[in-house]
Amino acid sequence: MLKKFATQHSIKFIVLLSFFVIIPFSPLPAQDELMMEETGQMFNEEPVASLSPDSVLRAEFKAVIKPPKKEEVELGLTFFLSLLLDLLMVFLIIRTIYYPNYRKLDTVFTFVMFNVSIFLLISLLNQIKISMGAAFGLFAVFTMLRYRTAGISIKDMTYLFIFIALGLISGVRLQIHDLLIIYAVIYVMLFLLDTRYFIKRESTKTIFFDNIDLINASKEKELIEELKLRTGLKIHRVSIEDISYLRDSATITIYYYD
Image (tube, rainbow, N blue to C red; front, side, top):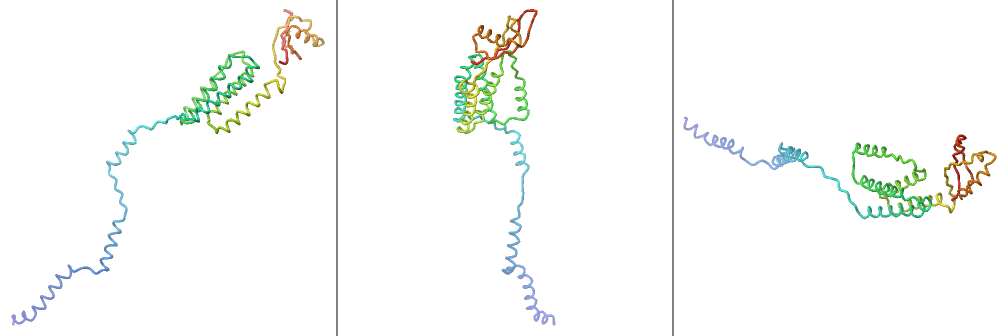
């Protein structure tokens, strides 16, 4: 009986066993394979940030060890052309306006050196970035400059300021045509205001007068004629500054045209 049961059901048993063994190793359908590929691509496309500690430390050490790059000053054609135009303008003002009127050579050195120094300083600061502390220190140095010469006149101070302004304007390195226009304006104003061609240039001198009898408001014309004879100047008015009856003298400021 057992042999008969085994013979009848052996074929069914073998078929069932082969079904369970073969099915797991069979290829997947095309749709399942497509879903698996898309899932894999999604995981592969996600950005993964991987920084090793060694690379981070190397970057930090490079930032610390690498020295900062020094700024270099370039002296190009514009620098030398601006310096040449500036010096030509300075010598033109001195030769045609200042020296013919005042005949002073001791102030020419001051004017030229101030102009060149300001030009070089502004040209340097125009290319190099300086800190705020250095800028304030430079400003403090300039504020400490004092001219304690008692004989310097307001005209000389005006010319000194003009030459400093020329060096400052030239050091900024403007366009050549703009620079020439500024030079022309400064020169024309000086020529009109400080020469004899358009305005009579009045000069003054302080003298000590010993004829105390003429120091009187009613004798002003006589006093002017006396001063003309003694000085040979074309005096048109006088101003009495001080009178000393003990010494029989007076301090007078005379005004005359050159």
